[in-house]
Length: 534
Image (cartoon, rainbow, N blue to C red; front, side):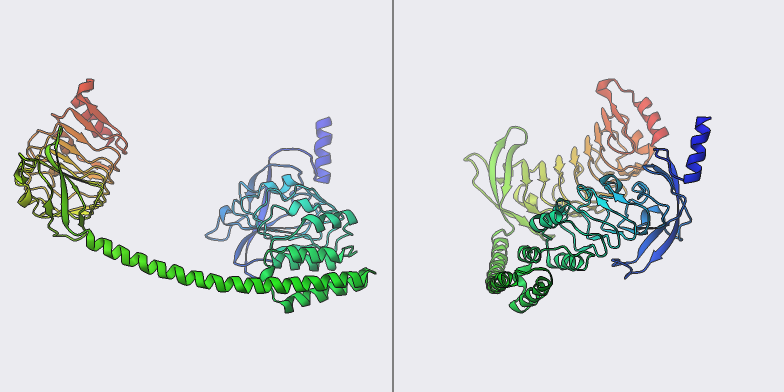
């Protein structure tokens, strides 16, 4: 029986202090620029009646959207109903809400909890004709994006100045037609609430001056003006205008006219001095700007000189490497054009010459294209490494004179394209590493002529397909690394040609599989799983 009575009471008065889920209804409209503080077209939800609950969680929003719009497009919430006693929590539905426009309601009081849900998006808060009397001290703590606070035509009698110290974007603050702001609040505001720029300051002065009681100390206005951060660009004429406005207020509200007038005159003189200081700083900044431009020209000249110094002549540090044998470690080269030929130089040990060089190692240099005629300098070269050099593409004539090459490592570059036939002349090649580039597509038969190939690394590229005709028909590849690509099409014949391999690795891609013979994996089992999943 008691539950029935409670239900009847809630139905009659439409107010239930509970946390039951609630549903609201919206009428959706498009609002053009110019309405209240709107600077661009907004998509509006006009809250319908039937929202009687307090502290309720909103689980759904009813209403028909205008074509092409959804909840995420809603940027403005409008309330115009005396039955509504709180601002509903709609953040989970209207995540991009910038405007709350309450023109008539029964809110009475505002709390931090009412508004905290909109902290990530709310810029304009307009609540008029709602009988608000008290604003909690921490109301605006979370709303750091606020540009406008419009609380006109309410019954506010107290506002703490502490509320406005963390609102760096505040530009409009309006309080006309409210109850008296008590003297203590007046003093708090004078000492603490100093708006951050001229626009918000002027709006606040006007709102206080026109409020119902007007209990405001003119010295407060002066302090606001003196502490504004943008005053140094206001000339003496504008300063005099503000001073005259404040003197008019003083005539009406303060008997100590002469003392304050002297103070204001001193203020005007100080403002004039600040204006002159600001103008001087502008001149100094212009001179500094000229110096900066001159330095930029010098930097450009130095860069040009550096490019001329870093020509295509290369220097070798010859060394007998344990891994590669007698090697040239390159430095001081700059290959920026296709077709550049390197003139190599460097001091050999007493028993060696250019024809003894087995490996050419080029790392961390500006080599955008493969240097030409490498074999003309190093006729017995077996290993070529071009790593982390910014290499952009491979052409079919890049390796024409390197038919005896055994290892080609071109990892960590910027390669996006490989021309068909680029590797056809490398018939003795055993190791090919193209990892960590930006390759998306491989041309047909790209590795088909590499009958001696035993190691192929294509990892960390953007490949989507592996075709059967990529590989040679022979079956010598022992390790294939294809990790961290974007494979969507791996032909079964491609994998079948790897059936004698010890390692096949596709991990880190959509086909996340790995075959490791040394770990006891069976190729046929791996092959069947790949056919089903890839």
